[in-house]
View 1 (cartoon, one colour):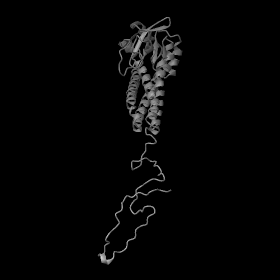
View 2 (cartoon, one colour; view 1 turned 180 degrees about the horizontal axis):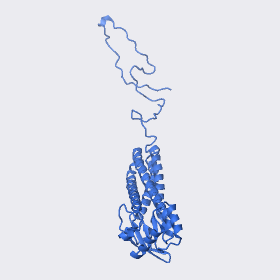
View 3 (tube, rainbow, N blue to C red; view 1 turned 135 degrees about the vertical axis):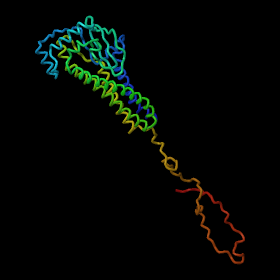
View 4 (tube, rainbow, N blue to C red; view 1 turned 45 degrees about the vertical axis):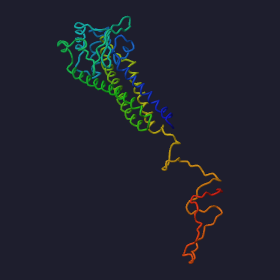
Length: 337
């Protein structure tokens, strides 16, 4: 397979790598621009506070049973009610909040239609701290919080930091993979190096996608049912998870095809191999009836090998005339086969 075949073999993983990069960029752009409806629909989780109330729709016993079901034993229904009551009194809340990778957006809901009004400034290693975002850092609010609140928030902060780093590394390594992929056209060594970067890109993209999916799934399952009784609903975004798992699928496909290009799709032509004498591997057979030089010790066709006789003593051991002046490269008249 020549260079053209090599280029065709590299084309597929190259396109898959670019597609994976585009998906990662879409994840990073979510919740960064309030005027873009497309980017506003890219969020990990939405917190809907439109119908928040401090009076639960269920009984105190039912709420406490739900808290115990998810391992929240140091929080009572009265604690939740007190926090939400002060939340309504002490702050001006938006109808909803959307959490992205670099920040969050908030807005209003009119006739069941969401309208994003503002997005936070993008920040590295972002995590959503509800009381900080809502301006509820006063001591009277914190007094109503459970004792393990800070511990839970520290875990969430650590996981969010790792998730951000994983997405960032996946983005950088995927770009490097695209750049190094140019050298894969020239040789299998280029494919080998590109495959190493493709493996790193896949691992970090998959790790980031798994982290984000598991993290917000736990939040929704553990808190969603309880908070729903107080008019607060949690929902996971759809588009951003489609984008992040498509990035994983494209990255995996690119890794497979880059690996295939290391084993196959050589850029050398099968007719271009030479032997040690720098000649073609296939030699032509000599045609009959052609002239060729005679080597040492060969005699022309039809001639006999001259016989040496001792020179007579009368001439001093030498012949008066010799007829041995023959051409060393005489040609055979015809070669018969």
